[in-house]
Image (cartoon, rainbow, N blue to C red; front, side, top):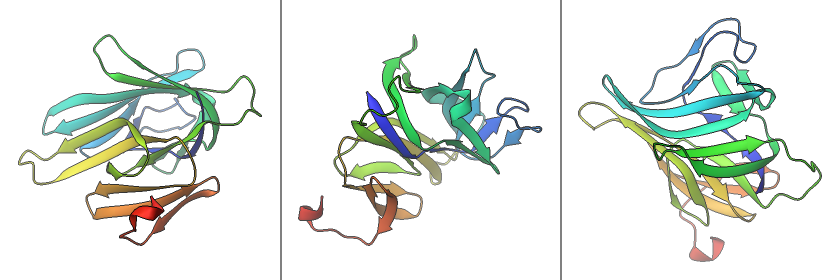
Length: 186
């Protein structure tokens, strides 16, 4: 399926030196993080983990062309644009989302993909990957979700550490809007 990526920032990246043109290892902390593997051909595997204490688990996998990824300071981003996207499962049952450059770059996308720092709660959207990590007590946590929106404009509501956030997603981008909304605006 052809999708437009509007905002896709991976959580707390851990990228070894030289993978994306970086001269030093990029490493951020957090209970949800992304680990980049060395490229195979022109593709990079990104593993999204949740963790608690010394334990960690795979929440989802993403592959993308190495030229579509960029490091901006300590942030790992999939460049905005149009991509061919498909979903599969690996041998262990983990969700694998694959992004490719489209064969026909002028084709019309069927939907939009965004990443949010929380869990999708409301809106006409589908969660592709949902990741959650937490402290050992479970009182503190991080969440991150990769979300597919089939039609624009769309309003989504997601819940993160700071509470509910409502965003209006259009072809021009994403804007945070005040809440609550009336049901007609969904």
